[in-house]
Amino acid sequence: MKSVLPILTVLMALVVLWYGATVLLNAQWTRDQAARAGVEVGFSEILRDTLSQTRPKLPAPHQVVAELWQSTWMEEVYGRRGIVQSGTLSNRSLIYHGWVTLSATMLGFAFGTGLGILLAVGIVHSKAMDLSVMPWAIASQTVPILAIAPMVIVVLASIGIKGLIPKAIIAAYLSFFPVLVGMVKGFRAPDAMQLDLLKTYNASRVGTFWRLRLPSSVPYLFASLKVGIAAALVGTIVGELPAGASAGLGARLLSGSYYGQTIQIWAALLAAATLAAGLVMIVGAVERVVLGRMGMRA
Amino acid sequence: MIWAWGALAFWLAATLVNGWLAQNHGRNRAVRLFIPALFGVTLLLIWEGMVRGLGVSPVILPPPSMIGSRIAESLPVLWVDFSQTILKGALSGYLIGCGAAVAVAVLIDRSPFLQRGLLPVGNFVAALPIVGIAPILVMWFGFDWQSKSAVVVVMVFFPVLVNMVAGLKATDVLQRDQMATWSASYWQGLAKMRFPAAMPFLFNGLKIATTLALIGAIVAEFFGSPTRGMGFRISTAVGQLDLPLVWAEIAVAALAGSAFYGLVALIEKGVTFWHPSQRGRA
Image: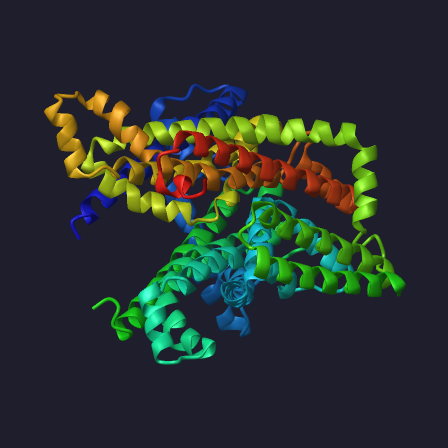
């Protein structure tokens, strides 16, 4: 708890910096407008104007928060297309776009985690797989796959695979690697003494796996799940970037950048950040419960 | 169909050879290089065989041979894109970002207060989808490589910062007392003891940052770029359904990414030769 004060201080400093940058970056526009109108502007006018422009270079924090509020609560509760009046989520609200992104992320994360665990089981039990798959799994991560994500989406769409699946594939590709590496480490975590003990019990390989390797890999699993879920979210957002996508936080980013709606971009960014933080926190909470039940962290 | 069956037969044969080699000669160094190489060749052959054998349209998935010939004939274009995206955008951003991160790490290392405040924030930011700021930075810095460089700076900053701060803490009390008994000043202690001790951690961050740098530079080009660059070429070639060119760019990106990573790993090997993880692999 003693770190609350420092964190708050740093956050406060960030907000102050943000406001300062807002004034600095937007002042040029204000001066240009004033010069065109032929009026002199004083410091207080610049200050007031820079913090409330409709298309600022850098929106002020309160503008972003207002946009977030506007496009979640206000849109859903009072909007004509909101869930209260029409029964479905409004396609102008960040809740809807966030949900689209979240569902693709979760699907991809599940795929990726499953694939990572299966490959790890194979690698631990077969020497040939260890030697042939592992170098390529590592090489696969030096490929900037995220950069070609939009292309994968377009190509898959051209053979008729649309919707959640293509985005989930990108998310899965990004999240399988941390899980694979973590689980290989985890399955190999039992030391020679423990393995020998199971051998004296005449345990089969399957028995050794279920009774020893799997339980001892759980802490590693959760460490890699946290990395994997953040990676899956990034993959999904980038997968939503191509022009074809009309829903999702990535699509909001792109349309915001096309139309110069900076406030919309920042609101979508903040929503994505909240989503990422929430997902990592959920994994952390599950980790605490599971490890506590297993008696690993009393 | 002969192609497809041939590829499958080769796959089976290669798997058996690999299994046998791993079982009987797994310790031999040449064999350890040969096994993944054979696996890679098998993957390419299956790809080629399946695409030809099943008559997949090159618009969906071109065979590797087609991509290879496309690389050979469009070398000038690829080189222009490579220098625009990787040399100008990614590399400059990587150097600035990593340099800034190391400098900030040394600065906040002196203040426990800042460390307690900045580290959780830094860890949090490192997990965020930072690529999202690409449209904003493109808006601020224009379409040319400067904006790509800025995206890369932001992307590599936090992973390197977090690792470097952890690295600067890696010395134990005994070692620091030893420096104190030699009456070493803060800067001497930093240069002679804590900096070298931080190197394994720093290189951990630097290696993660190589991939991030490439991703940042390429993705930023989707939000606007001059008429060259790998991201630009990928997005326009997809529009023209010129898939061989897209795959050629991907191959270049993959090669550049692996080479970049390998280079950093090589430097790491030279700098942290004393670390157990390096000594073990003689």
